[in-house]
Amino acid sequence: MKQKLYHASLALHANGTVLLGKARSILDANAWIEDEFERGRVGRSVSRIQAMFATGDPTDSIKYLKVQQNFGNEPIYLYRVEMPSPHRHPMALVDVVKRNQAEPDRLKDIVEKYWLPSQDWQFWEYLDCSMTIIETLSEPDFTMVAGAGQRYLADHVLAGQLWPPKPKLDNHPPKTEVGH
Image 1: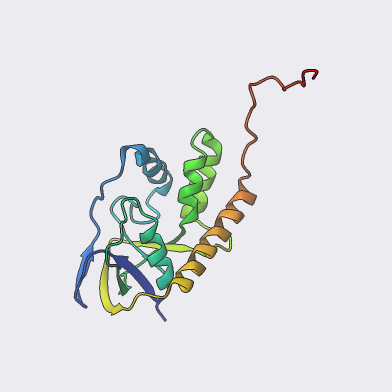
Image 2: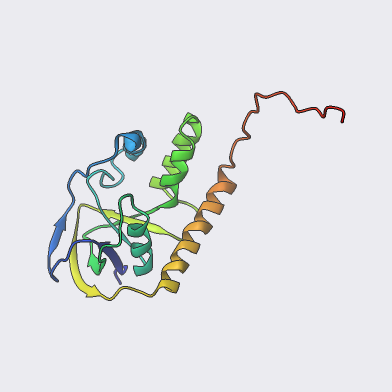
């Protein structure tokens, strides 16, 4: 049985529409992140830069769209979609890469775990070169979307266990109390 996949969008599409992946624009500040993923991909999957993205849970799709930059309060359209050969990856590791820019060995390991996941992640993104709109769905209620946020947070906790934050160096001398 095929994995049910979902995609949220600000664009209205008719059932049966085929959406093709194309190079997406990436903020200059985030270009290095996609470069890291490209270096680690080594042909394992479709490029994140040109991929279509879906999730395995409709609320995850809504949550993902709502945390994207520049999201206002536009109407959201939720779709059940099919992809020809989707690849599943833990979405939280994209944020983990951001926090480890100054750690080349960690970056390599995190990117490797993104492309070849071995942990029990909860919030997955599915990548493929295209997707077909199968059905338009109604938007889930707020409490269900909040549950998606909890799954994403659980993945951040797991990532924090795998790659604990490095202690920050304090370059300031310790404060001493001065007499009254």
